[in-house]
Image (cartoon, rainbow, N blue to C red; front, side, top):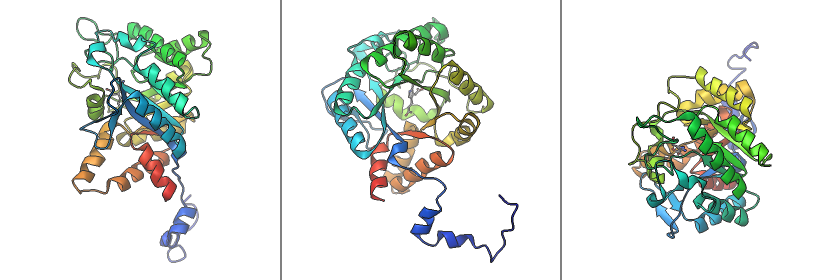
Length: 334
Ligand code: PBG
């Protein structure tokens, strides 16, 4: 790239920045509504919308509102929605058994959303934390240690419940070892050969998930942290090993999470593996931008669009974001 002379004034790089049309023409990266996955929090009550304090502008939706959101996504050209449940505390227990209820919140939401917008992909989180009283993603022993293989058995059943209800993509976010292979094998034997797996392959133990834990109601419950299963923020080679194993076990797509603080991981994963690489702009990233916007310190929508473009530039094929609908609207009018 630099083996030809680029010398001033023959080269003035500002020439290609002088007006909008030429900036557009020479853009190396594009962002469209098709790059977005809308993350939505659903709840099992009657109230249509319940605002989430730590995520200004975001509500928990009841099932009817989730169906409306699916229609909205379709109209905006957003290809898929990822749903996350806020479970009534009365339905939580130590083992998260409610996640296996075929008439539970997630199966009902999937059906309502598919009925409202059959062309929008539905992605379901596979993990136990919304359903457990202790807020961990898996089953725990007496010492509070999250058990791997026992948890995988439950995750397999949870993924089958989601697939049976019509989920297009199951997305294990729990970071147990071996769960992708186990889920893939179970989907195959159950005849769900077309159900895709989006593995949260490189998911870090991050403080950026704070507002999400408020949103799903697991924050106050969570005992300890998730460092024995989620990745250490210091590591990058380890992320590549996680991704390699998950692809070998049958993941169709992989994810890096959180997003902006881990752009280096997005770039390494997308360039080394060439598999569809998603990135999650998590709740804390959303909250940071919106809180600063609300104080008048930054232009929130502008910063949002810049962050979303940065994910594309780093090599992401898709971006999960709570801002997807508003981003799509901006992209349609710009
Ligand atoms: C857990 C899960 C988390 C998120 C999605 N699934 C958080 C966690 O690991 O505690 C985070 C989403 C966000 O912060 O927006 N299975």
